[in-house]
Picture 1 (tube, rainbow, N blue to C red):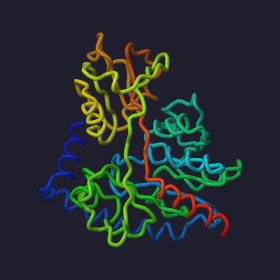
Picture 2 (picture 1 turned 90 degrees about the horizontal axis):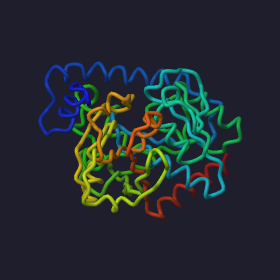
Picture 3 (picture 1 turned 60 degrees about the horizontal axis):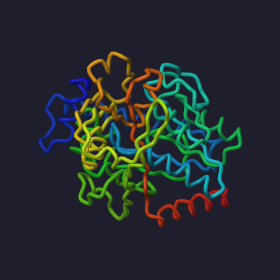
Picture 4 (picture 1 turned 135 degrees about the vertical axis):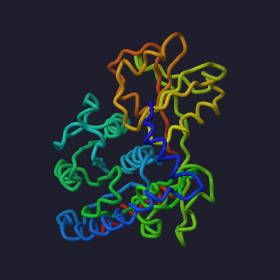
Length: 340
């Protein structure tokens, strides 16, 4: 189940009370390291990628905010516009450090759960590696004309044409402290530097929204697409589970959003929370058995497909944006490409 350390940190980061003194005491150290990293990045910037169309989708906070659905939608949007997108990712939690091209049958242990999900959902080439610039070079060499970086807002050595910061509307920037006293990877005023702030959810006055300045955020809606059986790919509408009992399994940074989607569909769920990027095994499901269906996130499903779980399903979701915003992003891409 979810580690007590991870749970404790999230309790501290997203509560109104100030963080404890021992975490605040370490915050200045992170601040110094952040400034040093920016200076080092300036000296090792990948100049050969200047002029290439790279879209960075990231966040300011540690943990989930909705980046992956945003990346999936962007890839589909770019393909529909006749472009050839590809995705680079570090592949958090993977056991292999080599540069790898992800395919549908890749092992999540070698490529990471999110890159595998993106590859399966979009059909675009995905490359993982600790050096995002090297991964981008690989994609451009293979004929990709737009690279979408899954995370990497803080990877300053890699040039970018467009920066998109995704914020969860309920949790926002939390207590607005830098790690480890708070969830912030960078200062909150960084929101004013990016090209787009995407807010996952409808809440307008999310914690930290005062740092937007003149930036006009766009709201992203996460819609449930269907519930898909892990064994035979049979898809049901989420509404068809209304009134049923189900085990809800989530190994993601912010499981409450997933649980709320199921509760909103009037499903009587029993919650099972695991650490983010958890490597599932058969033992994790020993107490989650019987005739009651197991519904999990799509990110978790890519890691359990080989466990032959009976009556196991995953919820596929789509990110939905206003059409004006999608058109604006496409215009930015086309303008950048024409100028370079």
